[in-house]
Image (cartoon, rainbow, N blue to C red; front, top):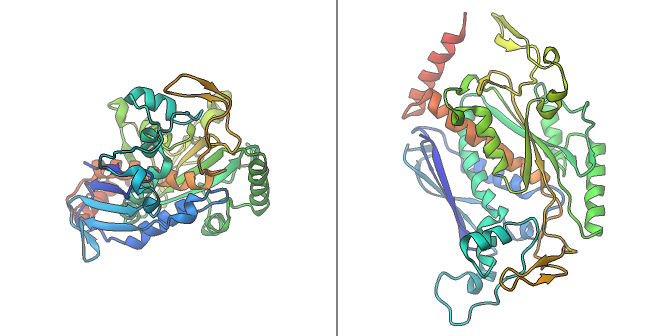
Amino acid sequence: MFRFLTAGESHGPSLTAIVEGLPAGLPFSKEIIDEQLRRRQGGYGRGGRMKIERDEAQVLSGVRHGHTLGSPITLRIENRDWPNWQERMTPDPVDAPPEPVTRVRPGHADLPGALKYGQSDVREVIERASSRETAARVAVGALCRQLLGAFGVAIHSHVVSVADVGYPANALPDVNTADAAFWERVEASEMRCADAELTARMIERILAGKRDGDTCGGVFEVVATGVPIGLGGYVQWDQRLSARLGQAMLSIPSAKGVEIGGGFALAALPGSRVHDVVRYDAERGWHHLSNNAGGVEGGISNGEAITVRVAVKPIPTLAHPLPSADVVTGENIEATRYERSDVCVVPAAGVVGEAMLAIVLAAAWLEKFGGDSLDEMRRNYDGYLATLAR
């Protein structure tokens, strides 16, 4: 069974992840993890925190001489901003606590978190609810990518839109057939968008939002290719791959909507224009003539690319704050506080989406193919693929 936990506060000493269930003998590259952490910190519209942090993973257990041991893997990511917060975030009792944060920010976890946990200082909510935690998840996802990559699975993402600027709904890039050059253009773009003209317009839209003291949301798309038929299941609701993908993507801070394949647009079409025709031939094996299903049918991967789009709301911390209230006194106030913030996180959210897709697929992969070692898993995988051939 694959499972993982993350721990750590936004301004604490570090973030930590413990990962269990990866097989022994998997080639391990710390550079792959650090590269994914670097990608998460990029993208136009990021705030001042990204100028402080230089995320890098420390491997504390589970790896020896460049391969996994089959035991739990522990990763640590240092928070370089910690020295500036030691007094405010010390775990030790203090004689003179810092001034509490009591004004809640609309759109954050501030109000429901403070009321749920009985906190009079919203700082104790902010620190864990912060999207800083996603750095640990990206590190876990990078481990999962190394497992999936050993079997030819590749995962990418790109930005579809920022605010009202993006691809027309009927002219989205076909990620099912995107080549290496397309993804190279994505990675070269500050917006992680393959279209240079759209990239420029997205940046201008973010700048306009920044000038207005406002923020921008958007949509990203994530895709996994090389996924075989058979991951997930329909026997119970929580085995469905589509359900797992929905939960994983909606766990990303600011995510407010998820589409798999054709998504909401399919609801307006007749079934004859929606469902993907099945074909078989000796060269390609089982395949479909289209991929409106997004690679998942009946909660099971069907051999096509897994495609998911995620709607990301605008960051709620605004330079011109909205009216709010004090969680301790109940006083209504004209403006809440402002903390250092991004203007747009859509490109970075796409990288987090890649990590979550990798995590979901790795868990389903381990359930399907098992094995205590990579060699055993490969035998199981090869044997299963042989049963699919006619």
